[in-house]
Length: 85
Length: 394
Ligand SMILES: Cc1ncc(COP(=O)(O)O)c(C=O)c1O
Image 1 (spheres, helix red, strand yellow):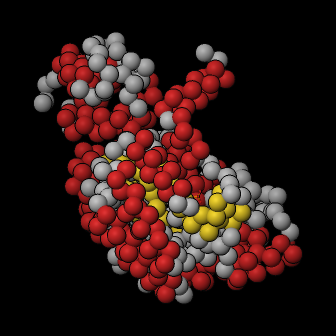
Image 2 (cartoon, protein in one colour):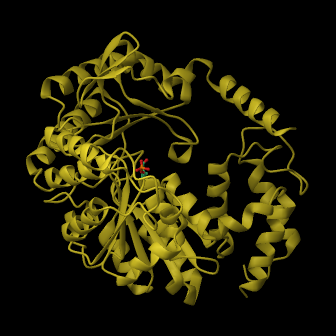
């Protein structure tokens, strides 16, 4: 997973998040994690650990404060991933 | 949405989740009779949900010491340790804690919550890293947030997962504070301390161990997991609370690093709050003596813990991973947990109800905590009731 594009990250997140909640909903980059998907804080923290392992990066929880949508999360992962290379 | 409307919405969501469950939280205790019995409403109940592990809440030595302190020093210090609130008792208790652990330094805080807040935020800051167990207590999370350090979680009690995350950090592992607990407050399991110590040494990180629930409970003299595993020389900082086995209120941090003392000058949760009252300090000092000499109490506690754990297991309940003074019963959902909780209350037994997000991994728990003062008859009575109620969860 050395070269990964922002689009790939977004697509991967959408796919993963669709199975993540009980709510039947289409997940798009604009989807709000909390208000649309009703992801509680514990689930979000566990998702972060999965993401860290998948992309082999560290995603500090304090960097999540500005993350509202799937796109925000994808941007953050992309930024961390690019910096770590 | 206004600030107050947001609170209304949160209250409505809470009521919708479990309308009858509300009564389980903040239940009014009308009278406390002993370390094991209290009155709730009209019922005299057996308390199986306290953190009073050694049963010292009515110990005559501690009550006497508290009385004397009130008579001689008054009810409150009315100030911070850094100003007018630094009494003889606070300094004596710090010395006694340091001697107990055979460490150089100790700082006493006003609560255990503040001990974590003050220690963590004093040790790390922006640019540093805290690597915390996934099941860490809220006081640890809050301390990390207050510190401004980068917060990373590792999978609960999983040394391989911790190592993987340290490796990812590269050189930054040397600026990393790893935080774990001796006994975890919800599931009652113990940290794999020896393995974690080995990893922290390899990566030259710093380790903080919170012995809140293991102080008085583990080790020959009750130091906690550190003593049970013989790791005294390996732990950088130990925090803990007076509010559980010591039956007071307050917290501490001990360390062999002389730099701990510097926290007094930088740590807001130490500086900007009043120091513990003289009575609290006096009863805690008396309780610390009883705790150190309390080998027989620990034996009683562990006999009770094993008795309850194995009986519940036989009855078919799903339990936390290992026996101990905290026995967690895992239920499928909040409703089932509440039904069991109500069933126990109808039989005059009080336990803790723990619902998501307070319990790890979205679990719903009925959490029992056992105490050295529980008699074998009381434990057997509890086991009978649990066995009768098992069809509720089957
Ligand atoms: C693991 C842990 N640390 C710290 C604390 C805080 O202790 P205190 O009640 O003294 O604030 C608690 C208690 O709730 C705890 O469970």
